[in-house]
Length: 233
Image 1 (cartoon, rainbow, N blue to C red):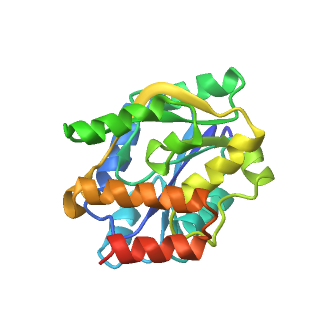
Image 2: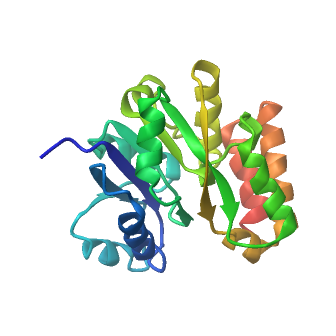
């Protein structure tokens, strides 16, 4: 069998209600032109997520310690693709996403992401999603998904596991310093469920504060403590 071209790595924790839909979507909306593998990394789900995953016979299921950085690194270690594609469980990539990523790679892109849209018509969230077209670290985040060559991922040491939040942004900031980061014009659609649960103004304000704190030198523990106090309570 040919070596997979793209390994799709999905960290999950208690996502029994959506993981099956995402896996089905990935199969239905790929171009069919490239060999894919799906690696789902569970961080200790207690809601039946693992039972649902074990019904997916063509999905690689990996167990890991909890924490998205740890889980994504574990997924990368178990992936065999030349390209890694990190995807959140509540984010759906555009049609023919695999061909779009491979086309960018064949044109020299080693890493990048798609633009983003939310599954809501809230004008403020739509504005922040619009900003994802700007090629600057302030406009990046894990919800946009991330593709990267496995070689480049290894050269940068993967995700920093001391970060319990902000791990995507921290890694992408490092990539920007040494590589040409590519923004593909097509859009992923990501869930606004956190905004619905906590309130869009509250969530957006505190995410903005986390970005600011990081810029001012706050470390991973300080960022998580702020997040836990403001958005987990």
